[in-house]
Length: 503
Image (cartoon, rainbow, N blue to C red; front, side, top):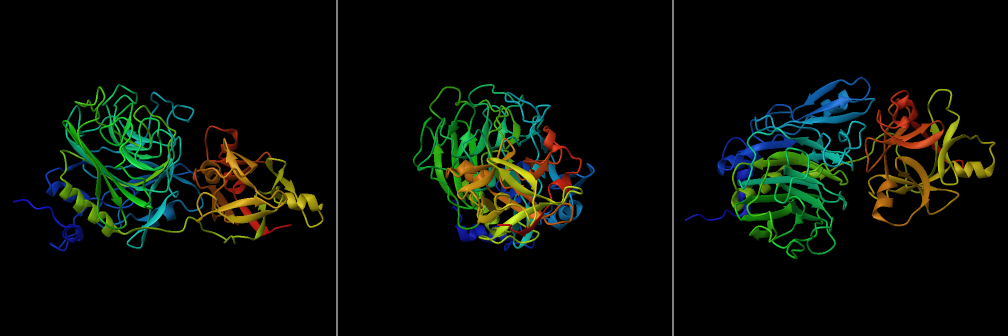
């Protein structure tokens, strides 16, 4: 008679205590008869024997690329190789490789029903440094998805189609989300367009309530089945689907003819709980399903690009995994020991201190980041300048309003107003206390890209940095669709020396 293994037993299996080599998540799925048909991670290998490429990064300085592999077979990504390759410039994640051997790689999402933000309709690529973590003490990087960023593969091999059975899990940042549509990982349309109810089966994470919800205020793990985010059989609400509070979360969705389930848990400790297990939603088009088999990350099936979130690892399987198999996978994830690490580097900033930010671009290095009314600009400031100008060029460092691991900059002469980006233009605005304002006013310093001082990137858009351009302030990327994204002089224009505040 089959008996479900205890969490302790599953933990032992995941650690490899029953054998000489620790099994990876996809080894565990295979042993359960539901092998991975896609396996994506920028943080670690998902098979015990995998030593190939995890992801590719592209350098902003010269467009060169390199692949990042595990430090050893089955191990954590070689973040040091990325840091060396990207030193003194910016890097983007261009490919997330499929470890299953089926070449189901994820690349820049193409135009769809909703156009992407780039001039050619493609989605943006993620910063390679936006989501640093450690696994068992070793540094790695996740995939930080800002609105407008997305990855996709519309020519996939082996994923479920029609009403075929499949499972999937993903490890996300449980604190990085919004109500936009739709932060997904999983099965979607091959056309990048909405082709009807039941044509998707993807994990959704966020607090969108347009279609359905769980209990509390969110965020929730739900299923994006196209034209609906579902927490259970109802089209509206499953109170058994809880709001998520963990920093790292394991999100599980699985489906087979007239049955599907949502499971979830803390990726850093404990087991999985089942939030729903039962019949397909009681609305037309979802039973039977009409899955198409493409794979998406960070976007909706029709390329909806309003969502944000962070992805560390995830897989899709052939067949409907047992709870016991998923419990062993969860134990393996817990054993990987995901943990947070510093989001900042370079010269330290001290909360409560007054600072002035000096431009380092040659011929402009007597200018400081200041403001005139709500406009953030650069002005020539010195010790002999008028008191009002000194105050306009001075900022009080605060703990980040949207993430206390980074910083916010409060005006010295207009207390309660902070530098924020809005449509990627820097402006001085009074705080309204909203989640959006707090995130837009949070910035993470790193060592200056030109070797001087700090470069200060936007927490919610880590491809974008404080930049002066024509003496105005922007949140600019290293190349892009706006004039202020021009790659010329980028490293100089985004590097500021932090001095004691004039006021």
